[in-house]
Amino acid sequence: MTQPSRAMKAYAAAAARDPREQEAEAFLYATGMLRRARGGDARAHGLALADNRRLWGAVIDLLHDPQNALPAGLRAAIISVGLAVQREMQREQPNFEFLIAVNENIAAGLARAG
Image (cartoon, rainbow, N blue to C red; front, side, top):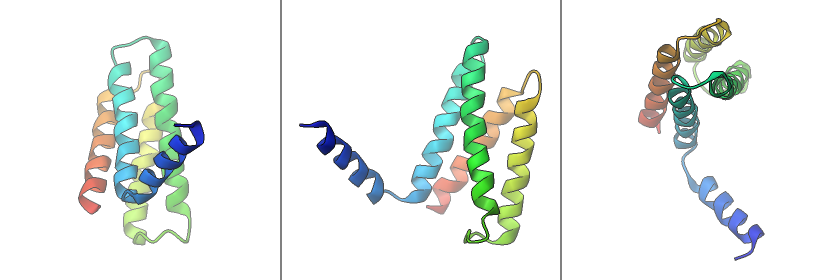
């Protein structure tokens, strides 16, 4: 099978999946990175935190979008959580257990909503 046809199959499979399921997967991926990094070296910490920063940055940006269909109160609550996560990641020694717990709770909420 050629590379483009594998890519097309992967795209078609992703397009057919529920968006909430895909969002939950992104949080679970970041959580897995955090879990592996918490006992690792500085490089592992940095990579996991960078992935989690990108994820939460994207989430907060999307929630600020006036076209976002979520209720304003829910958007504000998730933004507040995201800002707490971002503050924690800026600490000299972030609490990985806190970051993991938040990501797991968000993923679980997305799975229930899907």
